[in-house]
Image (tube, rainbow over all chains, first blue to last red; front, side, top):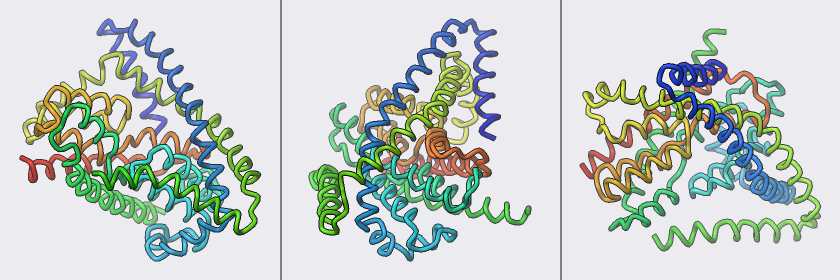
Length: 194
Length: 176
C-alpha cells in the first residue's frame, strides 16, 4: 500500500504540474526537499546517538527491566505476543513516557529501538502484530502536554496558552483508544483471512 | 503551567542522573556501554536516510505542483456541508502527511484568527492530538527494514481521522 501511495503522490503531482504550469516549482522542490531530507537524517544522528547510548546504559543497569516489571499488567494486554521481561517492553514504555511529556526528540530513538527489539522477536521483515499496535499508538499521538503548540500560542499572546491542554487530552484519549480498537479489528480480520 | 514546564525540563536530566547512579552502583562500564549503544544511532540515521529522502521528495512534489491544494478545494464543499469549519480543512488533510507543513499551517491559523478564537483553539487541539502518520511509518519501519507493512497504514490513517473528528467535536462542545 505504501508503494502505491508513494508512487501516486509523485505521479499525481507531476501530471498536475503538466496541466497547471507549475513544473518549474516541482523541479525546484525536487532537489530542495531531497537536500532537506538529508539534513533531517544527519540532524537525527545527534539525538539517536545520545539517546540510544543512554538507553543502552539504562538497559545494562537493569532500569528497563525494572520499568517492564512495574507496568507489566498493562503492557501484556496491549502487546500479548511480547514475552514478559523482554527488553522491548522497556523501550516501549520509555517511548510512551517521552511522548506523553511532549519530548519528541527522545521518543523517536526509543521507538526505533523498540521496533528493532520486536523485529528480533519476529525474525522477519514483515510487520508483526505488536509492531503495528505500537505504531498505531504512536500515530494517534500520546501527547498530554503539547509543548510546541503551547509555545506558539504564547508567541501570539494568548490570554490562556494552556487552555487547550484539556481538549488535547480528551481528543488524544479518544484517538488512542480508537487506534487500539481499529488495530484489534484489522488484526482479527487478518487472522480470519488466513 | 509552571509545574508542567518544571517537570518537562527536570525529567531528562534527572532520568540521566538516575541511570548513571544506578549503573555506577552496579559496576556497569557506563561510558563504554554508552559509546557502544551510540554506534547504533549512527547506523540507524544512515539506514533511515533513503527512506526519508524518498518520502519527503514525493510529498514535496505533490505540494509544490499545487495538486494537494486543488484536492483540498475540491473536497472542501463536502466537508463544509457536514459542519467542518472551512479554515481547518487544509490542516486536517495535511496533518497525517507532513509534520512541518502542518505546524506551519497551525502557526498561520493561530496568527490569522488569534490563539483564543474558535479556529485557533481547534487548530491547537488538532495539532496536539494527532501525529504525522506517514513520517512515523517511514522512520520506524525504515530504520529496521520492514518491507511488508500489512494493515499498519490503514490503522494509522483511520486513527488520524478519528483524532481529527474528536478534536472538532470536543472543541465545539467545550468552547463552541
